[in-house]
Image (cartoon, rainbow, N blue to C red; front, side, top):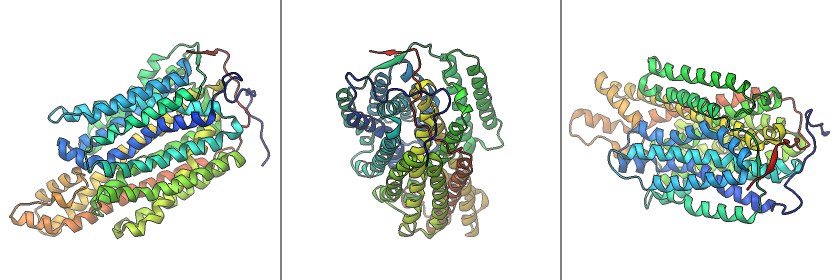
Length: 540
C-alpha cells in the first residue's frame, strides 16, 4: 500500500523530544503501562468482588451498580478536562497528579467503614478514582504518542493496549484470590502498582512540555453536567421506569446541556475541545467505531462475571477464568491490529475487528442457555479478538489526526467517547437485564402456582439482588411459597441466562453498527507528524 500524504497543514515534527535528554522510549512505555493498568484492572476487579462488598456492607443492587458506574461516569465526564490539562501543564505532571489522586482514592475505598455511610463513601471515592484516572490516562497515552515516531506508533500503542488488556485479565484472577482474604484488598493492590509507575516515570526522562493557553472552565462544567445527567437517566430507568418523567428529564436534559456545550465551544478562543477536529471524516469514523465498540467492551466484564456466578454457579475464581478466555483473544489480536495499522492503515483492522466482535458476541449469546462454560469459551475468545483488532488502530488513527500536535486534547476526546459509551452501556444493559430477568422469573413462578403479586415481588428482588450467590439466597422459610422458590432455583438460573442473552445480543448489535461505521472510513493514513503548536514551551 502506498504511503499517503498527511492531511493539509501537517508538517514533519520531532518524534520523541529534543536531542538533549531524549526520553527512554522503553521505560516511558513501561511507566505509562503500569499507570494505566490500574484503571483497566479496576474496571474488572470490582465486578468480581461485588458479592463480598454487597454482603459485608449491605449495599443495594442499585447502590452496587453506582459503585461501578460512578467510576465510569467520572472517567467520561472528566477525560476531556484531563486531556486539556495535560496539554496546558505538561503530560508528565498531569499523569503524576492523576496517579496520586487515583491511588489515594483507592486506599480510601478500601477503608470504607460499615454502616449507613458505607454506600455514599464508596460511591464518592470511586468517583474520585475515576477523576484521577481521567487525569492520568490521556496524559499517559499522550506521553506514549509523543515519544514514538509516527511510523512506529501503531505497534507501540498496540503493545500499550494489548499489554494493558492482558493486565486487565489479571483483575478478575487477582480479584478472585484477594476476595478470599478480604475484598478491601482489591483497592489496596493499586498502591504497589502506582509506586512502580512513579519510579519508572522518574527514570524515563520524559520531557516536560506545556502550553500558554487559558483553561475553558465553563466548557468543562457543561460537559461534565451533560454527561452526568444523561447517564443518570439511563442508569435509573430500571428503578424509575422508562415512562417516568425524571428518567426522560435527565436524558433529554443531559443531551440539551451537551448541545449547549458544543455551541459554546464553537465561540471560545481556547475551547476545551476543538470541535473542528470532527471535520476530519476519518477522525469522526474512528470516534464512532470506538463509541459503539465500547458499549460492549467494559460492560462485558460485569455482565459475564455476574452470569458466570449466577447461572453457572461459578465461584469468583472460576468467573475470573471465564473472563480470561475473552482476554486471551483480545491480547493476541491487539498485536496483529497494530501491525495492520502500521502497514495498511486503520480501516482494514477496524472492519475485521468489528465483524469478528459482532459474530463473537452473537455466538456467545446463543450458547449462554447451554449453561456450560466449556461450550462458550471459543466465542468469548472470538469476541475478545474482535475488540483487540480494532481498539488500538481506531485510537491511534484518531490521535494521529490531532490538531497542532495537541495529543493530550485529542486523547481526551477519544477517551471521553470511550468511557461515556461504557457508562451508557452499563446503564442500558443493566436496565435490560433487570426487566427481562423480572419478567422471566415471574413467568416461572406463576407457572408453579405462586400468586402473581408474590411472583412479581420475588422477581424484582431476584433481579435486583445480583450477588453472584444464587444458591445462598434461596428462601429458608417452611411455607409452600418458600418451598416452591427453592425448587425453582434451577429454572431461575436459566431465566437469568436468558436475560443475559438479550444483553449479549445487544452487544453484538453494537459491534455490527460499529462495522457499518468502519466502512465509511476513507482509508487514508497519517504518515507524518502534525506540526507542533507555536505556543508550546518547556514546563517544569
